[in-house]
Length: 102
Ligand SMILES: [Zn+2]
Image (cartoon, protein in one colour):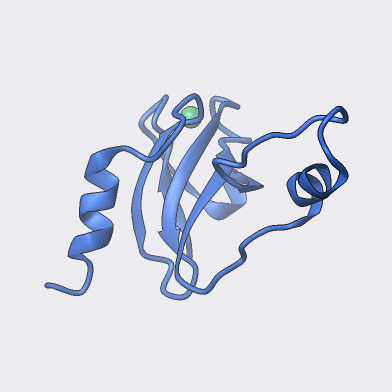
């Protein structure tokens, strides 16, 4: 079971209380950009096995969007942070680097 802490209200939400929003930190390209960039923005996703940065909404809580770093294979959560953050915070990168060091 996946449990994520909402960075806004501080509650731990089980995955049925949350709505997934796909990959986080996508660089947005609008209709005025070249076709390859616009297609990549609309359709191409990493979907790698391992560490993912994702968008989630606390649908049955405060209703706000937030971002989470987790391992898609083990469901280990490295942290959550506000959706307005342009890149993952340094403490989350440190937790990812420390994984498996026990
Ligand atoms: Zn919340």
